[in-house]
Length: 298
Image (cartoon, rainbow, N blue to C red):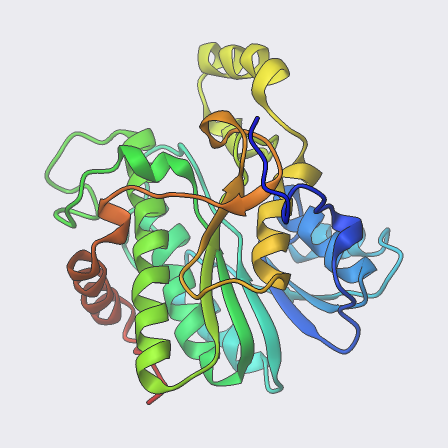
């Protein structure tokens, strides 16, 4: 594993004080979202847990050693996204777009979008634009190195004209996350805003996203995972790093170990497609049309 002198020491205990700061975390009721919630809450932040299963999240929040604000948000339903955004009537320092689905069977969101694209990208796209006038520091979107397997095109985002493959649909949604971050940062800079757009990935972490795999693949993941996967707490470190450390806008943070599977958080590379400004602009235009939301600054 390689390391960088300024990133190697970083752990959740190294978070700067977050007292007086407000953070919204989507998918905060479990997995990486809960680990991120725990770390930032212990550092003093007021955390708004944006979740689909409110009763479950409230039970979880009740076991945390700090108060957390649990609110309903279903990213697969743009009406829910709008309702959540309307409930936020105060400044927010950090928005962490963490929630996501992976390897699910072909399905549609409430608005008719393919589930991965609609939830992982379009839901967060709409949420970010609706909240952006209240965000004061940064937007962190959780991506994945699975994006490297996605083709550099935006044709048929809802899988209406090709055989559906869940892994490919997930990869395309994660490429969309990185293209969204790229174009969001360009627009923020052009508008004169000091808000940052960043992305992070957890590496190979035990997040629960593999629960939709078939029995054989679950067995493979479990066996291989014992050797290459890191804990959920360690998987949350790149997100925490991106949320709190001084970084250039548009940075992508992940584990610094071999293959990006585990290690300490550091700026990492992304695919050529994920750095394509024309593709990012094309995705933005498509997403504005599909969600009926637009960049609100400038």
